[in-house]
Structure formats: structure tokens, C-alpha cells
Image (tube, rainbow, N blue to C red; front, side, top):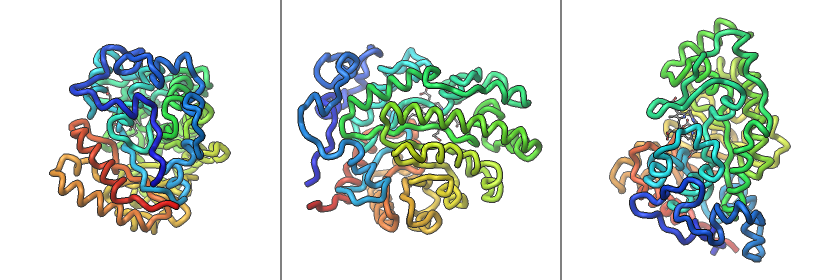
Length: 404
Ligand code: 1CP
């Protein structure tokens, strides 16, 4: 038997509180206990889980099933986590976010830590993902924006000119010190469970900045890209620096892996992706080549781009539900792991449908040199959290491998 995934006491022993449980407190953990392993305790005791427990451990998060799969190493089971696992599908999330704006909540380290831990406690996923947003570092770089409930990021003055681009300044750790603090709190609290840091890739960030908000067609973005390539490249170059610096802060604070979200890259042909996007995503990922943590690169609708996205410098390529993982592996190559790819909408179907899909994906994932089970995009807000918990248990059960 593999050693049980080590979680803090709060995560291991606290079942999800019925009907919420984030409590009214935003500055501490859910039940407000001051005991071992709570975020509140960790603000004064930063010695880490291992030191607290005085137990010897094999390798910590670097030896976890998740990091092993990213590195294409054998492990005790296929690891699983969910994009947008921290968020609106959880009643305890909705409760704790009641009176706090989205950007504001990303800037409060203890609240970030609590929200990040909620899905780990509830579902026993193999990795936590930092609660933040792709536009957080862009705001830190001086862009006037907000995250509007029900809409998403909205930019006050969309980027149109070279002067607009020049106003996006490089970020330092001090600009996002709340992220540094949140990661440190979390790493101490999570023990052997790895924490994933993330950033938005230049194309997806540029899309919000040029459109001024979410867009289906990315028409203004493409108009700028085709119409003024020089300005486009200048914009993406700045955004690459912002994304790289944001990821570096998270790596220095202790995350075990990073994911670069290029959610909307699938709007482009492969030729345009290679010409207008790949150099900038490569700059971000190659800038972290020495970081010593796996780099995951993900987009939606990227069937034609999977090979190119791997070339950007990823160790793991995220795949949406449109491409079976064995087909994706042929496109990406045997030197990279894959992540995915259950359609998030399948989670709204009856359990036998979910189960059959999970089993199919695990079987197809065996063709890859490493497989991290995930959805093909983020959890839909209307998803029943109990179904996510069942999926985690099923993935673990079906993929369990005997160890020496
Ligand atoms: O008030 C709220 O609850 C707002 C909803 C919300 C949440 C929970 C937004 C606004 N962002 C987030 C958190 C978030 N954003 C996480 C949390 C960690 C986790 O996965 O559990 C992550 C990883 C992101 C990253 C993000 N933000 C992406 C890339 C991933 C993806 O889903 O494609 C993108 C495209 C965004 C932009 C964004 N922020 C928020 C919304 C609703 C959107 C999408 C808007 C659109 O459709 O264009």
C-alpha cells in the first residue's frame, strides 16, 4: 500500500461542513480552531508539517503521485485534481466569499489559503491549486481592471496603442507580496500534498486587455494581431514578463508545479499560433526551465495546437475533451505527460455515465507516458460537489497500482 496522502489535521479529519462551513470568519480557517494544522496556527508557527509531526517522510510533495506523473515516473495511482476546483461549486466557498470582491479575496493570504484548502479537504484531490486569477498580476502591473461577478475580468481602458502597452510595467515580488504569503502559508499547511501555482499565458491575457472583457470571437484581439503585429508582439512580450515574474514568485515561495493557462489559444490556427503566440509562451515557460518544478500548459479547443503547445516548453500538456488522450499523446510526443480530459458537463449526467467516462479516460491515458486526471476545462458552478468527490475516489480505485 502506498503511504496515505498526508494532509493537515484540518484537511484530514474535517469532513465538509453541511451547508457551508467557511464560517463568517475570513481571517482564519473554517471552524476557527486554533489547533495544530490550522491556517491561524500556521501564521505564527511556520515550521511546516514535517517538523510539527516529527515524522520522517520520503520526499514530500516532490515525491507525490501528482509530481511523479508530471515527470512521467511510475506512481501508486493516477493523480487527480480539477481546474476551478476552488470556486462556485462549493457552498463553503460561496459562504466565505459572500461579502468580499473577487480581486480583494485574492489579496488576503489567509482567505486565499482557506479557499485553496476547501476542495482538498472535501474531495481529497492529489493537488491544490492556488486560489487567484489570471488577471491578478496584470492588475499588479498597473492595469485598471476588476473581476465583475457573473462576467469575469473587465478592463477600464482596453489596450489600443503603444502608450497603453508601455503602461504595463514589470512586476516584482513586492507587487504581489500577498501571493508570496499565501503560498508560504499553504505549503506549510499542505504537507505532502503539492500546490500548483499558475499564470495566464500572453495570448489569453492579451485577449482580456484588448477586448476589455470576455469575448467569444476574440475579434478585436485578432484585428490588432493581424493589423499591427509590432504592437501585438510588444504587448505579448510585456505580458510574458509579467506572467513569468508571477510564476517565479510562486516557485520561490514553494509551489510544486506551475500551470500556464492559455485558455483561449484554440481560437487560432496552428500557423497563427506559431507565429503570434508560441514565441511568447515559450519565453514564459523557458524562463522557468531552471525552477525545478513541472510546467503544465493548457488551452481549450487546442486539438490542432497540442504539438506546438508542448514545444513551448511544457512538461505536461493539458487536453480538453475533444481529443482522446491516446490521440493527444501521438500529437504531443512521448516526452511529455498529458492532463485531462473529462468534459465538465458530463459531471451533470447520471453517475453511470460519469463512471463510464472516467474509466474510458483512464484507459486512454495509459497510452501517455504520464497522466494527470483532470477535466477538459473548469468545474461548472452548477456541479454537485459530491460527484467530484466520487470521481476522485473512482480514479484512485481504478488506477491503484501495486507498489513494492
Ligand atoms: O466571484 C467569483 O467567484 C468569480 C469567479 C472566478 C473564480 C472562482 C473568477 C472570475 N476567477 C476565479 C478563480 C480562478 N481563476 C482560479 C482559481 C483556482 C481554481 O482553479 O480552483 C483560476 C485557476 C482562474 C484562472 C482563470 N481566470 C482563467 C484560466 C482558466 C480557465 O478557466 O480557462 C481564466 C480564463 C480566467 C478569467 C476569468 N476570471 C473569472 C472568470 C469568470 C473568468 C472567465 C471569463 C470568460 O469567460 O472569459
